[in-house]
Image (tube, rainbow, N blue to C red):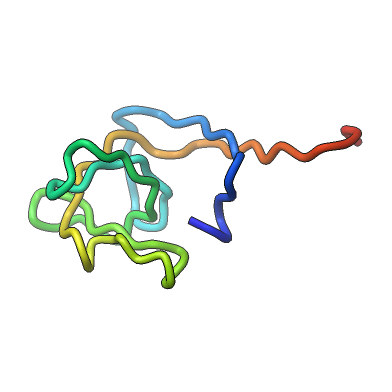
Length: 86
C-alpha cells in the first residue's frame, strides 16, 4: 500500500464499519481465505468488494484474485519516526 502505508506503520481498524470507495480496508480475498490483506476499496460488486492496490507494481488486487470480503476499515495510521516528538 505504499505510498499510503509503510512498513512499520501502526493501524487502528474498526470492524463492521461502513465502507465507501476510496477507504483502506482489511479484507480477505475469497480465493485466499487464510490471508489478510490491506487494500483500497474501489467498488461493491457481486456481493463483495473490488479492491485495488496503491502500488501497481505490487499487484495482488481484485484484478488477480476477484472480489473480497471486508473485515474492517482503517480509521487511523500512526507512522512511528525515530527521534524527538515536536
